[in-house]
Length: 184
Image (tube, rainbow, N blue to C red; front, side):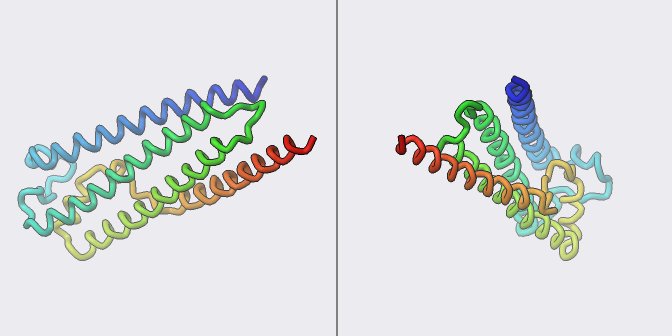
């Protein structure tokens, strides 16, 4: 009975975080679009920052790459919480070992791994831009650092590994359960 209450609380938390991830992605999209179409009003964070229209075309492409990497992370983050939300909805405490739950856990580990890989690439590319092309560094720095989402500290990699192992345990549990049903 207590586990069911915790599970229902986790469902609510997953829904809240899922909606928050969508809001965060929409906010990032608005900030990015505003920076392209109203660059003079976008420099409120850094008065000395270069604007997008002051950069040469090839350097604007570099900033667009950083923006697209961070937007990819936002989309993957939404996918992650959608998978968690669906997983918590589908899990049945009376019969938790189903192939559907095992495959959703496996897919969740792949999304976590993808978030880490893109974060790693984005963080290193952003660092490269700060060092090698200072004009772009000021534009990238003028974006909100919380919106870029480049957290390559290894937490997502560790979580992907743990969820992958749990998915394999669930898959083995399904196999054992099917063998047990066959041997009467």
